[in-house]
Image 1: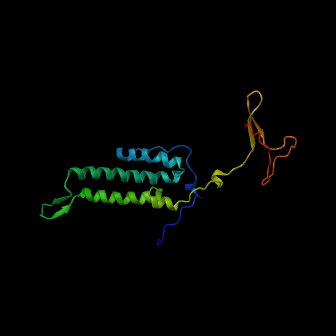
Image 2: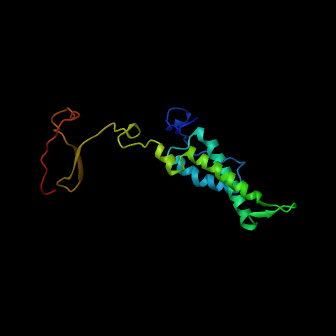
Image 3: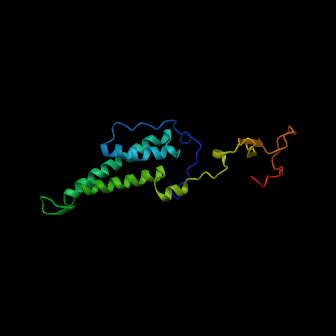
Length: 177
């Protein structure tokens, strides 16, 4: 598909967060498991790791594990090798490393792990549906004559009616408080 990537919308399976942190797949390498542990908890806590995203995170972690392995091999071998025919060619580990970095970049974008990808994910502003305020109670907090901390509604207790939305309340405060 040509053009900009669409902004992710939370309306499908991806909008159903997991209740518990998903288990790390058993087929991942040791380095991939470490990356899973590093990312899964914060992604889950942020509500970004859903049932639909588990395989994508596993694929990213496996690409990361292979990249780490290739970089370790490159640290101990030269980047350029002389072939039996006499030609100089790049190390196969360099090709593996570059391919895994390319794959990691794709998965990072899909999982929202890059600054650009995070900027496309809509942020929940205070007061939106996720943080909807369902009840506001205005109370006066004071110490009574016995020194006990008390809370009382900030409306006339003689009136059984709770203040309406938008209604202005006036109360006199004790200057000694």
